Length: 273
Image 1: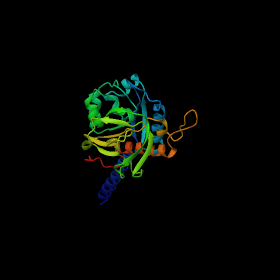
Image 2: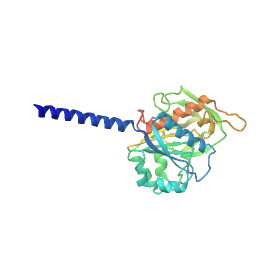
Image 3: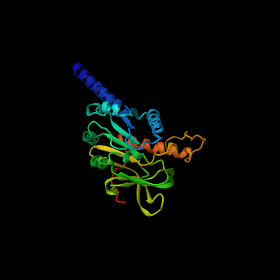
Image 4: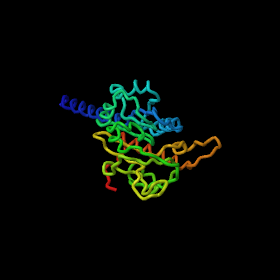
């Protein structure tokens, strides 16, 4: 009888230990690499983006960040062996052909079940590398003058957009995309007319998608410092976007990151329109 009781106690204790371990693992923040290397135009908002992403991770407790700011850091931190310690990568206003140690290996790494997040000129990156464009879901084509737009909220339940109203007004540099296929992504924000000349059409702003077992979130917003940071002002103490717009943008990217890490539930089913 004593042995049976002892075995039951041990089994119960083991179950508690397993449950605690699983809970602790689930509660651990994701580990992300924030990449800001550029091989083309370099946005002045990059230091602001780095600061905001670090603060969002710290305040939310959802993730921690390491940074890749130059070629040497990319060579050291983005080998396939080094990437094993990370849960995902953020391309924050990268441009051009980045010197990844293994481009295809990186794509396969994301596809194996990792998170990939990109802001603004993340779509102005690796133009000559189709696997990257396929993973992201679109490619920068052009832009015109910065302008105020009313983005249509295409999914009011997704963590990246559920805090927004039916439309989200923001002043920014709005990208026109090519190699974008609506039936291959889950739209989050879009325009139904050209941002500048107002020609009717489908102009995607933000979307998410599954990529194999990986999760991809992209928003084309994020050119301006006052989109990223509610406290930023120019040298004259002025800004185009209100503090509320910046706060909404931060919730937008935080929700997208949490979804990409699998910390928040959200639909990724492609839409036909």
